[in-house]
Length: 295
Image 1 (cartoon, helix red, strand yellow):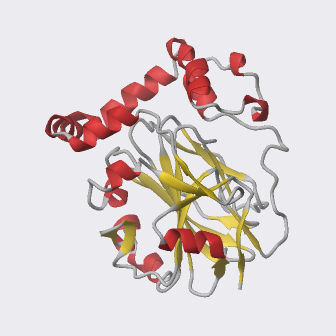
Image 2 (cartoon, one colour; image 1 turned 30 degrees about the vertical axis):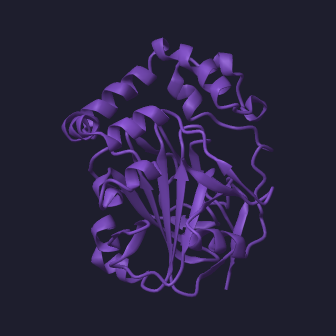
């Protein structure tokens, strides 16, 4: 059971997890863990399933998925019947007014839809993956010089579950360097998996880039793939002027995670998000929603 905080309603909700029984069996049973290590975490498994999600055979999954998870189709840019395959639906675009963006220059916005956790005054060698499990930023991006910039800074973890809008955006105006790829495994990023796999974020396929933000300094932007995420697609143009809220890229099928690092004294995260994070709860946010401000 995954409980998260709804900041608009000021209540806690239980997340309806896509593939809940599969996840629990895979990460909790000896046979499931054996198959996970021998097959499921491998690139070929996610690549094969990703291929299926790109075919017309997968189109029949769309309506059931929408109905099972009560997804609001009124926000879709296209009619659900127009999608040719499940992946077309999965990385769907939304109508322009579906995600209002706070354009105030000193407002920090969420780069995507998902469940957000925030940590301040971070220890680069002991970043929190989940309670009791930590990882190192040095291992995460494999670049010591860049990692050092974020000592005592702020870390935001935005978890996208399969039901979420899966395009991610820039949190401010500025310029972004070329994205660097790190090959890895394809574990799930669901909290069920995070509790079972040490250093999961450092095991999975991921990409990172430095975003030179106009109002928040140099932001380290990391996308983490997961089971059945065949690709992390970058759609931005490196080293060209970027507008706040502009699309950076999208994930193909599967749950995914975005991790952001801010330098020390660059940002102040909203109090309710910090409080819920300290209590061990993620906060549900949408792309464009204000989650903090600069200092």
